Image (cartoon, one colour):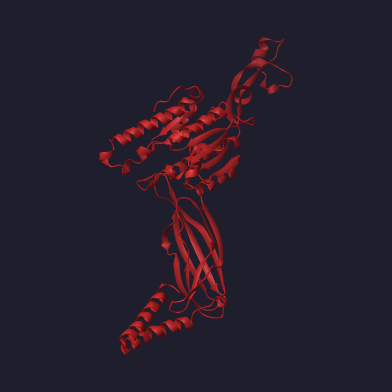
Length: 437
């Protein structure tokens, strides 16, 4: 029974009880239309053994449109069809759930139809989203009598899945200057002579050196000796992108989400590093972490973007700290880029990274500047905000004292030049004694 049948039943019972209580024949006759309506619906109500349905679903991308200066909305068209394989006419309600991040722009999520035998009905709608993983297993179908009083629920299989990767701005290439790299050749120069493209120095020829590296000018001046040129070795870096996915670190202001900005930043960083040929991995920190092990190439970039597409802020008090970052699963030569609004409890994580010998940089969005539109004018100069600013500066300075570069990111500015400056001074920062905002 649904809401309509319950209403009819309560009205019928009320009229019959009133007729008995007041001994009124008029009330009894008034109940007859309700009784006939209810009885006819019960007589024509469908049964499970008489329902034969076949469902199909398809979804496709129809276009992309810039929703803001940063985000790009993707339009997805979903078509769900159902066929009546039975021998009787049925009355159906087809419905799909409204998932998170879906904004319906065309059509509706429900459809009522009357299906003759071998007849089809089609539910079609279009929604927009910035990113996300959308998966359907079954289609909800409610078969009812002609009056819609009694319903039988059926869920035929209609599987479909679509993945909308986050949009991001393409970063220009930023050269890396790291103290620790992998042994495989790449694009990160190190302070050792060997194979490369930039000139390093001259040394005496040794058996086995390529003849193309002979320094003929020096050989002409010293006929009894042979000299060869050396170049700066270039190797591959292993970069781990750490995204803070804790619920209490997310913030919404002015229709924007801080977590969405962080996701776009990590996607842009991953794209730049993959183009450079680096070995890139991803770890989304949270109660139920998401992980992409380091690898190379476009397929790895696709894995990272797919992981970011399904990333959501999560909350669980037992694991609401970055100390659960599994640093030991990565190489000791890995370079970690931590994107997090930062909390005082997170300092211990960087202390652990320092003890283990990892290289890292902290990109910390300024939450106070981001929340400026929702902060009242009278509260902008309050003591609470001043205390928060001081507490944040002290915490960032503690991390900088450990030798890690810190980027206090004002979200109104582009991150790329700030990140480039931090990497340029990465080696001196390992010996830094403090940080100035």
